[in-house]
Length: 104
Image 1 (cartoon, rainbow, N blue to C red):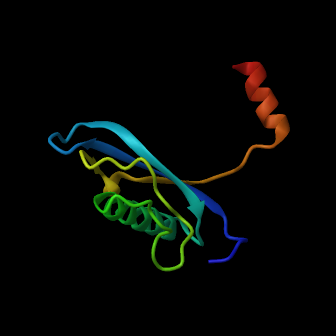
Image 2 (spheres, rainbow, N blue to C red; image 1 turned 30 degrees about the vertical axis):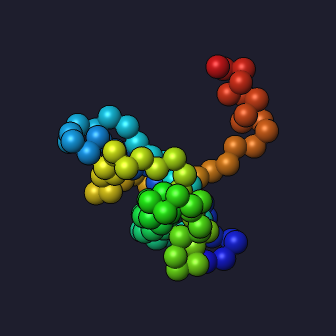
């Protein structure tokens, strides 16, 4: 991984562990060489965060040298990784932000 890698958004639907109905999502953002690597990095970060929450520690960056981390994990939720949606993250410039503010 290098700092020139594109940023990706990985949006993973979730459901309560006792139900299969999708009623939420967990969103991850970070650098990756490909969309496939972005999903892997998000999943690694989520699993590391779950393990840290069991130990009552703050999560550290995910394994394999990736800079992704996860927060606000909930053990009562199941992430549906097979339904994850990945898209490039395009940061908005000041003009786009102002246009959104005027529109909204």
